[in-house]
Image 1 (cartoon, rainbow, N blue to C red):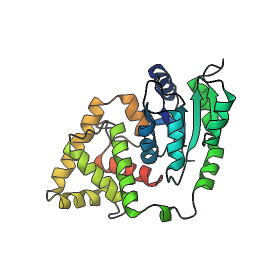
Image 2: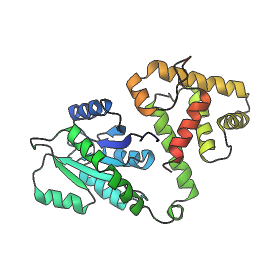
Image 3: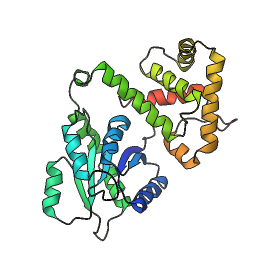
Image 4: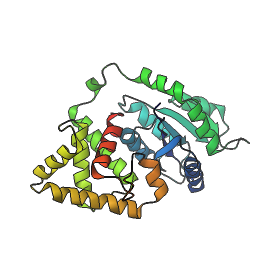
Length: 267
């Protein structure tokens, strides 16, 4: 039986302590993964489009951040998003008028932060309990012909943004040339211009008019430095494929294949 992948969740929250609590909660579990954390409603919408979470935990007020939860809900409603995740609002307001309004704006659940049993763990546990039903809901929300509402240019941009987001999560730094090569190789494998990682690395070498070995070295350097410098818990959370037991890092081909496969399944 295939192992169930962690539930990808986006957190939009301006309280630093609350963000730490959510991150600590996720680190104690294997069934949830935060694909982004931000205190900006505008950035939250960008993350939603590129990182495709199954659920969004949205702080309504965002007094210390930018925008507001209401602004996020309004922008989400206006955006042409084919597959909308479950939206969970957290708030310090006890007003049922507010609760009814955010539900009208598209929120699925509302949690009052001052209730006695409120905690990040309770919110996450509720999401996970709803996950099976959520999958059915997501399928219902998906148009019959998703390609008809997304141009080829938009799709290319969405794939590219998602690749960048995934590479950032494991610390593949933009200053390394290997980052450029990895991005292009993953993109080529996703779009099936070549059908295996070594073939796409060869194609990247041709594009840049350099050798296969030069591209492979640069990619390996980028991966090695990420595994040397990034937090091991972040690496284990965001990269769940096989690691080379001799080196303690992924091989170039495993790394490219993992991300091409991971991103393809959500496109």
